[in-house]
Image (cartoon, rainbow, N blue to C red):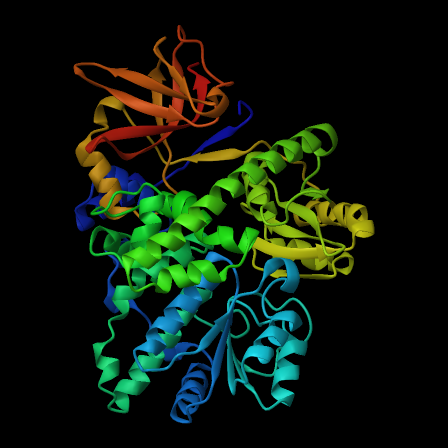
Length: 575
């Protein structure tokens, strides 16, 4: 912790003052907007007040018209339609969105989610085989997968089955499949569209479909309100760690707010088992740490069709039954994840502390939790991490990165991989067990080449503003929430520096193994500020010495009372 560097972000004071005046926001808010590249008043205004009217025409996406016409034709012909989606939150919410919209038109496609341990990831030959045993579709729609499924799509097209792919993954092997494909990474596209995950692209697709049907005079298309699905779409956007900019920001902002209104039964039940009170909006933190892990858990440990059924449930009793099953699995996932993480950290400290990247293989580890562990290790060690487990005699796992582009890294060492795919922040990969050591060497070499041989440097924390403790009040926090929320990729929660404070002896330790602590910062003639330091109980300052602290600032609720809460990021002794 103590090796982190603090980088105080610079800004032009004249631009800051002008932006503050034009927008009618505080100088702190305008400073943060400048730091994030919003120098023009119009761009900054669009960011702080996102509007549904700012959505681009969905037909700007290449192949969108062909895709809509293809679906419409099969609906008119009453063709059997199959939907295949991935087993993560993005894939699951993509299925839910498309299936629920089609139900409004009396179209009931059968959906299939890969069974992780027998069918692998995405549109594999195994899931295609299971689908064909159950159904004879004339149209197959692949969601959050399919870009790299050349052989499977060729197999289907030879059977005169049309294939539509809606995906955001990079093409990592072979030619572009012979299908109608909506994927902004394959074709030149607007940056706003390239930032979307699969459920965002499905949103664009159903938007285009509704526009097409309205032009045909279909009255049902006028009754569908897409904003009523922003809650579902927001789950996928946040969980898939795509940029919370452009259209993603509009959807997430309105989607999170919608949780304070009437919730659909599946989400209401999920919130109940996640201890999220009804009648309030939720944050991206609630999604990332409470809702998304529970949606993901079925695909990690069992059958991911369960959360699809949960989110499509029509009544609360059915939804609660499924939500309780999911919550039980989530507790088991937490146990497995903790065990793998502890063992993985020990291996790193003993063997790979100085490697530019992390590649770990545990034949006995549960493959359903390696992605979560990879994410934790990447954050903790500030470097790309790949964690593998043995599955059907292959070392199979996931990679996560907090900055470096995993697609670029893996492209250089892909000869050691049996199969891989994903995007710059997250990938799935399979390696023969006997090739793991060679792959680790190539992976580290690729990262070193990416950094042109530079050594690993201590993590750098970007500090937005130095603020006086007495200036932290309800109005300031309300401004943060109004103008900067929701946070996420490319819109990180701002970090503030408070100088020359001290932690008195009234710190309180809590949690499993007492790894966390609460602290209080004294203020003159004002109530003390309350703070929490997560996983930092082994790193506390001398209560007799003054410190400079880095914190994130927000609201919290306890016993139905709101209060300001600081989240400690780091501290240094005051010079």
